[in-house]
Amino acid sequence: MKFEKKSLKFLEKYLNTSSPTGYEHKGQEIWMDYIRPYVDTIEVDHYGTCYGIINPEAEFKVVIEAHADEISWYVNYITDDGLIYVIRNGGSDQTIAPSKVVHIHGENGIVKGVFGWPAIHTRTNQNEPVPKIENIFIDCGAISKKEVEEMGIYVGCMITYPDEFFEMNDRYFVCRALDNRIGGFMIAEVARLLKENKKSIPFGLYITNSVQEEVGLYGADMIADTIQPNIAIVTDVTHDTTTPMIEKKKEGDQKCGDGPVVFFAPSIHHTIRELIIDTAKTKKIPFQRAAASRATGTDTDAFAHSNGGVPSALISLPLRYMHTTVEMVSKEDVGNVIKLIYETLLKIKPEMKLKYH
Image 1: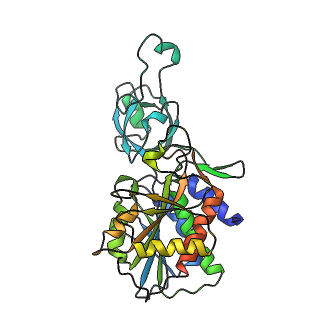
Image 2: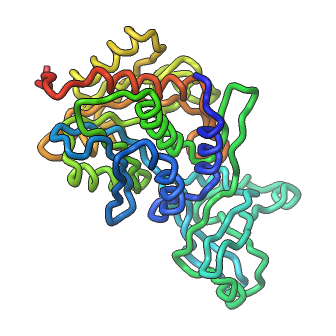
Image 3: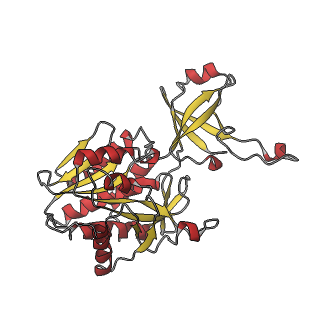
């Protein structure tokens, strides 16, 4: 799939905009501006989950969903010497923090800082220190707690990485927070294709970009109760397990470039999953399979277990180096996820049997 210039421009702007858990509003504004021409109406709930609706008057409702938030840090403690200690906001990885530049979102705007780390020369003849939450710290150039506070930095301020989007070898998209703003991009592209190809669908379609997935699927949990859909198709990322130090016997066998990953798990509805697989086979879209033993760990679980049970399925995008600042996805896979969701929607009928089997 070749991407439109306007689509890539949106993707770059969207990814480069900080959207940490609990503070997703700036990214959501960009996302809503992009989908506005392709939907009939847009709604936002109290916590910031956004959804565009096609055919809002229809009784039968289908959700396609991604999550908008990215991992980050909170300022947790400021020393008398002006150094900042942190706690996680989501699954932030302390091992990648040393020497990273950060943006501290203070009351006076963004302040730059760095995660400091002792030089290799000073670590000779001692047990090599390992980055832990207790020992990683941020230096923003201040020499006292008072000076830090004068910069507008207080306990509770959000901290994000500024690493920006780029393309690698014309094969990969690379950026922080592809988990899962790439999902928001993909569902937005589905809405665009439906509009530009003048496809009519016999149900209400809710293109949903949820908040707070990284801390417990909370946005999806709330919006599922609001929309009360009949079907939910969720897209998120999953691990490319072909890179070093990943055990395939534990994590499965998924690879960037080999297509979307269709999941098997207790929360996955058989009928919807088989519809997706049949669509992939019929339309000759490459796909992979993966299994999750108890929960998928994605918003699929929140939708599936809401409202007395919503038939739900998960289409995942293989990704390398999850929860780092250099997350990588195959451009070809991105196109195929978009195509798979789009073609699956064209097969859904309100009268289809959803009995679990």
